[in-house]
Length: 189
Ligand code: SAM
Figure 1 (cartoon, rainbow, N blue to C red):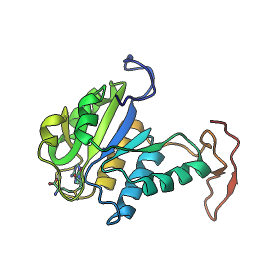
Figure 2 (cartoon, rainbow, N blue to C red):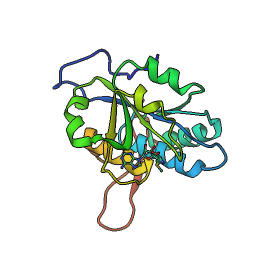
Figure 3 (tube, rainbow, N blue to C red):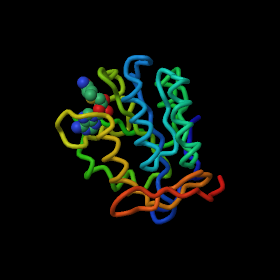
Figure 4 (spheres, rainbow, N blue to C red):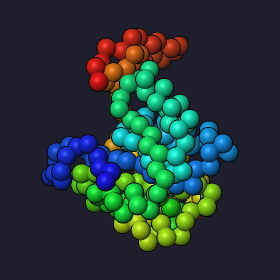
């Protein structure tokens, strides 16, 4: 069973929702850049892991290398059977699709969950995903991209992380109006 790491259900005012992302319809070798960007956006905007169907160990290793430098505990987990992962998930399953309910209408309920699984598709979305999901949620009702949909969804639910070094980071950014400043990270995982 895939769960978040923040323990059992809790009151709306305690810890924030732990988010896992499931990417279905990845085509290893055909669109590694798009799925890598999806994983990096998920990581940077506060998700805990990305389940990847079908598995792609090379992509998982590339994303792990980013975490090695910039810290945090995000991981890409190869998922041979995505339907099984959806059925086994211990919390609401949210499928992002332009055909769904507006995000603003569903967000308050999602923010109360201890953990959620957010599913994004690729070029072709399996039809049964609409039924397996607890919520079909739209980020606007026009077609765009899984990276854009996930980024907006995560920032609406979790906000945007600040510049503090992440646990275990070897480096961190000091925000500047001009130029770049990177300092060694001091955090411990
Ligand atoms: N043709 C696909 C379909 O039948 O849904 C859409 C593919 S779209 C390029 C890839 C993914 O982006 C979708 O599966 C969905 O997860 C996400 N997406 C695109 N537009 C969206 C929107 N307006 N709201 C929520 N998610 C969206």
